[in-house]
Every structure is written in C-alpha cells, then in structure tokens.
Amino acid sequence: MLKFVKGFLIITWICSLSGFTFQDSLVEESANQPVSLQTRVRTVVLDAGHGGKDPGCHGASNDESKIALKIVLELGERIKDEYPEVRVIYTRTKNVFVDLHERSAIANRNKADLFISVHCNAHHSSKLAGTETYTMGLHKTSSNLDVAKRENSVILQEANYEKNYNGFNPNSPLGHIMMANYQSAFMMNSLKLAQKIEKQFKQKTERHSYGVKQAGFLVLWETAMPSVLVESGFLTNKNEEQYLASQSGQNEVAEAIFRAFKSYKEEIEN
Image 1: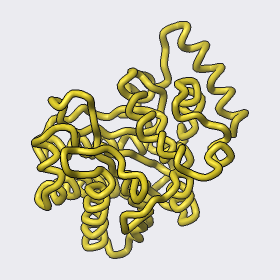
Image 2 (image 1 turned 90 degrees about the vertical axis):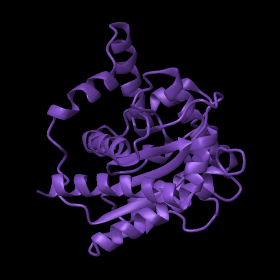
Image 3 (image 1 turned 135 degrees about the vertical axis):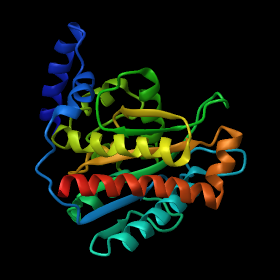
C-alpha cells in the first residue's frame, strides 16, 4: 500500500509544478466518464460518525455522535422499507466508540456496494450553515484539509493506531496527500452519489450547499467500494443545531440522503 501511495505522491508533486491537480481533473471530467463496473446495489453500510468516548464536534447542547446516529438509523429504515432486498449494515447502532479502521473493515468484510458516513460539521464562525459531501481525493483548499484533519484525529484515541494506519499522522498535511488517490478506482461512482446527495439537500431541505469536495478521510481511505462522507450541517450555528437536533430535521436529512441513494441505485442498475 505504501509503495502505491508513494508512487502517486511523486506523480502529484510533478503535476503540482505545472498547476495540475488530480482533483480538478476528476471533478470536471466525472460527468463524462463511464461509471465503474458496479451494476447493482445489494449491500450498503451506514456509518454514524464518532461515538462513545469520541463525541465529535459540539453545539451549545448537542454532540455530533448522537445526532449522526439518529440520522443514520432513520436512513437505514427508509432503505429497508423501500428495498427489502437490500442488506443494510450499521457500523454502530448505539453510542459506542468504533475505530475508523474497523468501520471500513466492516464494509469490506461484508462486500458492501456502498459506504455512507454521516457527520455534523463545526467552524470557528457561528455564521456558517449548510451541507457538504466529501469523497476521497486531493485537498484542493486548506479548509478541506482542516475538516479532514479534525475527523481523522479520532485515531489518536485508538490502540495501535500507528500499526493500523501504516504510521499515518492525522496532523500531517504530507500524510493526507500521500493517501489521497488510494480510492481512485471508485472515484467516479463516489462523486456521482455525492453530487446526488448535495442536489437533494438543496431541493429537499432548502438549505445552503457547499457542494461536493474531496479530502483524505481515513474512514473512506480503506473502503473497497464507492464511499462518501456527509457533513449534514454545522452544530456551531445556533439555528442549524436546533434543526439537526429536532426529529423533523433529522427526518429531512435522512430523506434527502435516501432520495440520493434511490436515484443512484436506479441509475447504475438501469
């Protein structure tokens, strides 16, 4: 694995000298690229970010881990109701801590066709509100890198994290660049699903969308299938915290992601 990413690092360095980035190419060309060989969705793994000793980011009175779990459980019920033939697997169903390494391993062991990780966002400015959905890729902006660093820092709470992640340092920009293209084989379908999720957020919830972005999230890095990480809103924004903490808000977020899942499934299977 390290030999693979080191090779990409050299290519990335060369391309950076000419102003070219893999991310720009992938995003701009994704609409014209054929999807991968995946032709059906039979198993989906739903991941509620953080949990247990890792509460994630905080609002005035709410934790990311609890809100993400409620959204994920609601999303899973919608998928099972509409598609009883689809196997829905959760990385956690309670407020417990699960290693990032284990979350991707759950998806890989079950040969999942999709991996969807749900989170809540945070920012030092309480004015920011809205959604964004990430796929694996190079960090185009420093803000993308900051989000990835925050989400990846959870591995410091894991035992033997140096061994599990091949010495990856979540505080190192170089470490994030080295892992950026690991998921290139699934990038097109990951981008396709991410675009559909953000479209549904704008249509269903009528909230601001920051669009589809790419960054080096460890929870996506090791998954061997199309994968996305959804930032469902900012707990550091008072109004958005209240929305995400409410059952109606959680239902709207789950419904938007479900509609995107439904559209994605129908598109690749037809």
